[in-house]
Image (cartoon, rainbow, N blue to C red; front, side):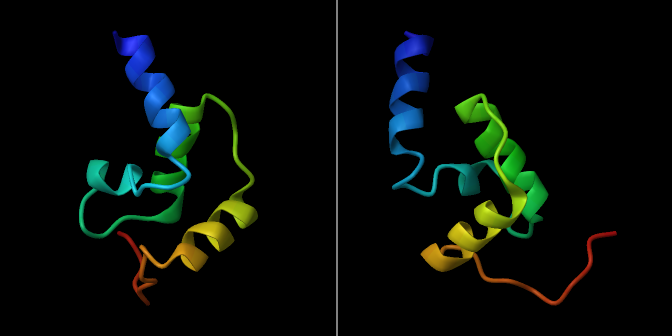
Length: 67
């Protein structure tokens, strides 16, 4: 059952904002990328990932530093 769920999530991760529900309201791109890498079980290029996520429009960049 878990295997089927993971397959479904992997198919939908490119279309639905699945990773955002697993994070707090303010998160870093590396935190989001880690969730995607864990779900997809592969590493993702940092620059391409950030560009793609920002182009989708679900994430609003903030001028803050995480402490």
